[in-house]
Image 1 (cartoon, rainbow, N blue to C red):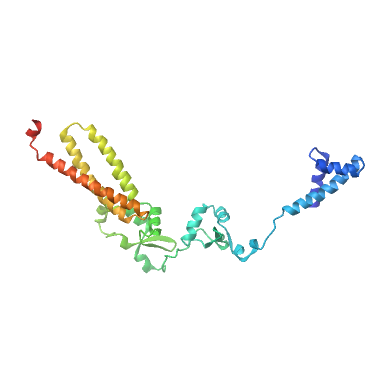
Image 2: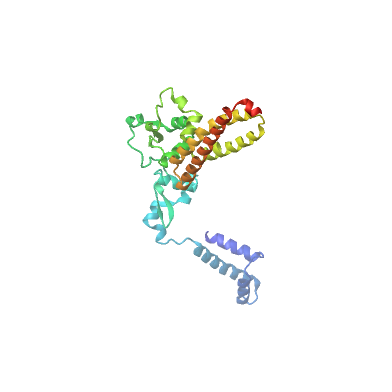
Length: 299
């Protein structure tokens, strides 16, 4: 703000109702009650005050704000606003090697050079040489995720967690062919069926246990109470028991693949053992009913 603007502000104050009471009392005393002279003195002193206020409000640069680190890096909050990317996502991309950054005083910072770069992520540290030979050993993540029945984002997350072997080639994610068995054979369409993936634990521990195990079990229990005929109930139990076999297998295998806290995997396997016992018991009940003469049952 220049001097002219300060004088204008001071003049508007003295002519209006927002002038400083203490300053006005001072200039009236110095002007011996002459109001016109007091106005001029007020403006002069008020301009000096405003100038000092602007000076004190100006940012003071310390050695910390202009050192070499601050010239090379910027706070992650500022970077995320420029790139319109959530802060947590930026930190994740730094950890994956997409952006150059580091921690200082427990705060994340991003290299200022990243601001001018395009949005294509830089290869992570897991990326090997980008050659056609490399591509021959890998399958695009989109094709792999379609084969596995999961989203591409889920497949990438599982690669980062070490569940699948993969890498970035030419700025795109690829999954090792070794993660897929006979991907090019016609039989792959059969092996990628729902029950095959369910038994293999491909849907993950939480989904396999809670959705396909617990929730379906609750629904089956409600339906079994609705069925009134013995023959209908037996048929229903046979179908449900056949369904439970891949569920039990899937929960066990998903527990072995689970990358989270091991306590959940252990508890899930315990539940599998108990479920297997109940499954065998159900099979014995069905077998006992099947081999019981109908006449004896009727009597």
